[in-house]
Amino acid sequence: MLWTSGSGWAKPPDMLHLFHRLMSRLTGREAALTRWNVKILGNLLTTQHYMAGLAGSLVALPEMPQPVGLDSRICRQADIESDWLRHWCGELDTLPTYHRKLWETCFVVQALWEAGMLAPGKRGLGFAVGHEPLPSFFAERGADVLATDLDVSNRRAAGWIATDQHGGDAEELFFPKLVTRATFDARVTLRAVDMRHIPKDLERGFDFVWSVCSFEHLGSIEAGLDFVVNASRCLKPGGIAVHTTEFNMAGEGPTVNRGPTVLFQEKHMRRLAEKLAQAGYEMMPFDATPGVKLMDGFIDLPPYPGNDWPLPQQSTPHLLLSVHGFPTTSAGIIVRAPAAA
Image (cartoon, rainbow, N blue to C red; front, side):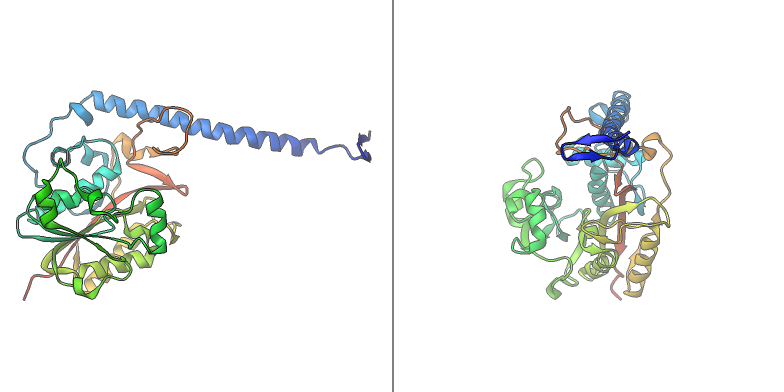
């Protein structure tokens, strides 16, 4: 049988091809709805944990910090439910939630506190500070802070400015609940610095250095590793650097090696430790052992807060997420400079 068209006779349509086109459209819609089902179940999971008093507003926030002997490590659910993290949540005027970004901030603070850096007279250097509360937090504890970010004229800053994550204005670093105006003005300075080209005059000038989820955005794995080594040169003898970054839990397999956001793996942490040792610095042992609690296996999927979505945003566990299909969490790195001879 032949089919007719407006211009004459034609072959029958490929019904199998049409069927696959229709199913691909349905599958795409169903995939989005499946992701939303994941968000709903994740929201139930976090709600149950909050109601059980494991995190959230029902948790007591210890008044005193808790020493734990922190080493370089990945984010885990047990940390969110620990007294050491809960204490810093209280000090930072926030609640302990199942979010890796909160873990990153508290990891930096805990590592610096254990090293005796949260004290008057210390000098700190922050890279790619964006709108972080840490400059205010450190200043209130007596540190003089140099907060840095890309110059607004740098073309690489455009994306961060567009998403309101660029720290080009000191006012965006002032958190009145964490520091007085007078203290902030006296102790916090903002300077434009490219993490790929750290100025020589910053070397050996700081008791502590930090960056929060920044060096994975330098274009490649190697650029990120080089930054950590070069930033360590800004430390005074006996100083400490603390950095957090994106970490691919998928072992030794493929990862994102180049691009706007790269994903480090355990093998890269081993190489970083070797590069730092060659430069005369010590990286605290890195522990990539996965957590054993339920949320340590929950991988969050889009949409994330801020994305366009027709339903109310759900609060899901966000200790791991999918980045280009890779299970990704946060990793914290601690580096020590040798003491003066």
